[in-house]
Length: 313
Image 1 (tube, rainbow, N blue to C red):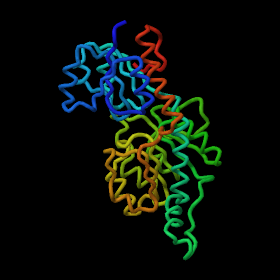
Image 2: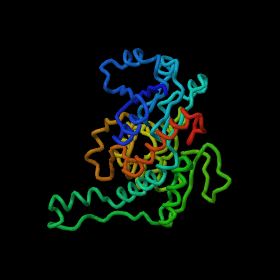
Image 3: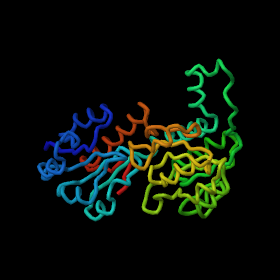
Image 4: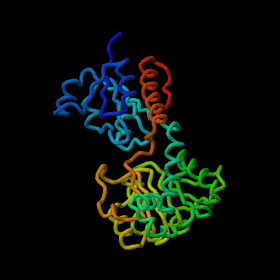
């Protein structure tokens, strides 16, 4: 059987690398001193690409690989992949939905609690010895607060179900109203932000959703409102977010993603009402293994002429 060349765009968990190397000839792009030359040198043999949420294939890369058949993404976010070019070229694209839904939804709830109850600040308070000098200040409750969700897809719905357990009224914005849900729908993000206390970003990143949370939306959420972003960094206008938090126009934020990762605005570091995570939404052993199995399973299905497990294109 012909050895199949798979271009791996970035380092991933060792389990995935090992599973790929057991089956294919894996070409590690990040190890090449000149990436464009590396792609050129192997352009005649690369039949598959494995990427993730931060590393995909643009039109230039796709055009440079004439034998490319499939792009298997180790992520549910595919904004780094030129999907139109893939459709045009007949290149299949797969991703990893469902297996990461619970993990990301759990983290969203964790961020809400961490911001409202000042969990990180409380932890630092104990470690620094300040508790011996007096009690930590009062915080605010989560139970009963209205949660607005931007994007009621798999992850958005999982967040809604979890928030319901805290007796939170749920409302949402999405491209279209969902006829099979009881949650209150608002036809614009601005209206949603005006009618909730916690705003959660859980939609896909597209040209339309870039900076969907802007200054106007933050002002509508207000000085007692909290923004949670477990979607993508560019969903939020980051300079405006910094201004809103520093000026007190926004009550708090819990962020797992940023506009220019791994760069994070240093103005946020000293703010007690902000919780910052290093894009770890899916980062558990169990979920990353399940995602890796899907990446490999999709490649195996494709090269065995079987139906793809999770096709996107």
